Length: 122
Figure 1 (cartoon, rainbow, N blue to C red):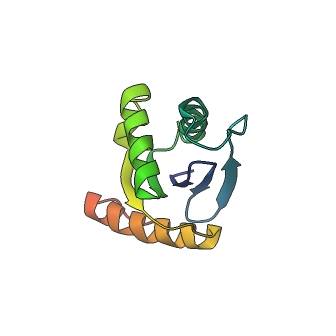
Figure 2: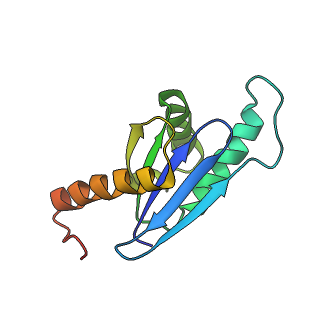
Figure 3: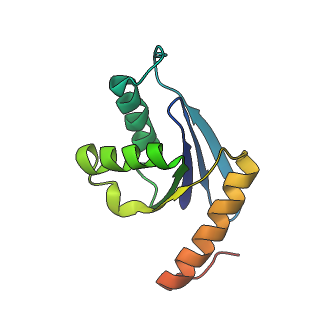
């Protein structure tokens, strides 16, 4: 798939891979549930799984609450630097349905690709 959009929170991630004709959705959750409070190990496991899910995607948009996308960005820079150049942007966003995620991502990538001189697929 050509693009991906990720919506993160501290408990799970929704990942949509898409191109002009199809969409593949995946929900990623940590392997173990954490108790109340911050569990850095569980968060890193979630972030690692998200990075694995988009490792072969050329362009990725990351959405979610400002704090969690900041933590994810830091994780990528520290642990998965090869992924960092393929993340097109980090955009704070409230929880979104799959349809809203896809609409946001298509709008973003249409503008992003246009600015990069990439023809928009029909």
